[in-house]
Image (cartoon, rainbow, N blue to C red; front, top):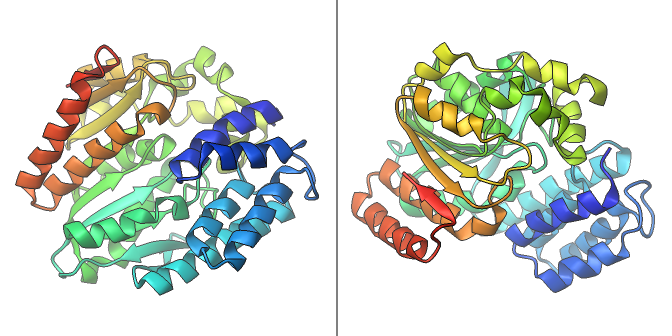
Length: 362
């Protein structure tokens, strides 16, 4: 399990993404003295206390985010499992009040899980599927439910395997999740036009499923492992403790078995050459998890590979606005709003003019 300083560093980035101020984040983190237990000074205790106060004040969206942080990086004890449940419950209250989206049960093989779904205004609306990474819950992506309605898309959001309300294990068979989502909402949108937005390890599953499902028309990912990471012993040995711990839960194995379990997931060169859709890949040049060979090799193998590389760490947290603009431009293109998409791209190019040499964009 990771040390407390590492956990504080990682969660600080996530909390800023959620809109919490640095002062608020530092106040909570300053109270936390241990990752263990559930009382005062514990990780889950301090974040949950803030979440309960926020929920009592009627801000259920913020409360959901705080409960999300309370079970970070994974619900490995009862207190964190309760925090994860409270996250889902508070987000459901917010969805109902906002009249946007719903919780929906779907089946993936013998497993049953819950997704968030918002239909488009029209039944022929294209579908956008989102799945977070190994340390976030689907509720963290909830803002896309409202965005989807605005741009004319149906939106489905799922937890990463082994996280939140997703009981699947992270292996090759988990890629079937995308097909199961499409089947579950087939009568309410045009699943033949599906775009997947899946950062990190979820992006790997999207690429894998595309090899079998031509209805996926594009994939957007941020720092996804495809082949090199899974086969590189140095990269796996150097991953942060947070990532190794979360992956052990997602993979359903002991932490000392993570490396060998991951090795079986690597995509072959033939599979990468067979990716038939545009793959937009946001890379971090100082990524502490994914080696640079991941995207340099993919550039040579994937026919429609589009690289967007920032001078940043894993997930490009310091280029959040640029990443959001990129994703928005692709979403607008996907929903047939080409003029708006070009406008957003112009804004992105303008920002990037002042970012050089922090960015390589192709």
